[in-house]
Image 1 (tube, helix red, strand yellow):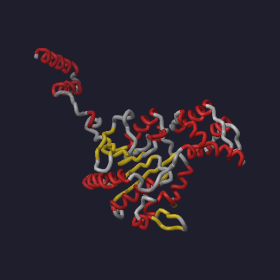
Image 2: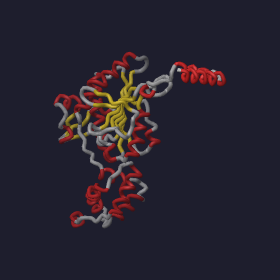
Image 3: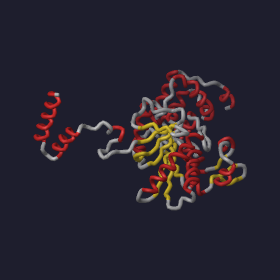
Image 4: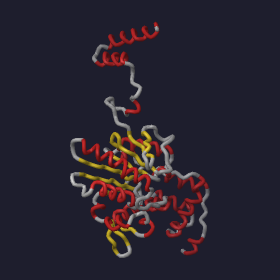
Length: 333
């Protein structure tokens, strides 16, 4: 077994494409040919553990494993689950100091229950959703009168198990202020465990972001976080996924992606908002006609609105006659 670990596996371009295309079909993640060496390295130790000699053997093993256990293991192998609490401070400052106060003010003025629904898509081992929970607790105090729900999901069951456990140590804690660590974590042996008041705000569940049906079930979100996740996806899957995020957000909801990511060439549905601390995408307010405000700025002329009104009231012939007169007036000018 040790000798297998030390032996470089052989991966042909054909083998790589078979694995690559399978991963893309199942998860939406896409690896270009320049990532072949990375994929090979990630598979090497796992193949040694399974005592498999060829990449083709492993491909058939994962492809025909109906339990999906090996597929889940493969997802862990090929993705870099590098995360930490309070990662990318400028973005989180824009959320806590600019987006949240605005939303709190809107909800305080509105009638009905005071709710916050946040989606952490691709949550990995839980640092992001727990961070968001702590920010909300800091902003809303004891949450009296508020209903807060943070939906967090990932494709890997293994990382979700660690997230639900909520125990952390080492470098992932490096950005937490001592006062926050003391307030929201309990020391357990050599680890820090997230306290119940934080855990209770987060609901973890398994979700494949390449499943449009499951994505369509998400709705009425105030904010969506999907940071440094779509970098793995093909443009086709990104477009499909961003449409899903847009539909899941309520009007005026906000969408956070990684600070080095962009929706350029992917979607024009969102408006880019320039906050003091970071750039954030927003779903424009829906107007009376059911379209986003950005798409209703150049409305038809008042005369044409009369035409539409005439047609809507059943006077189609009168409307066509009026339209003809308008054209004649324009022609005579």
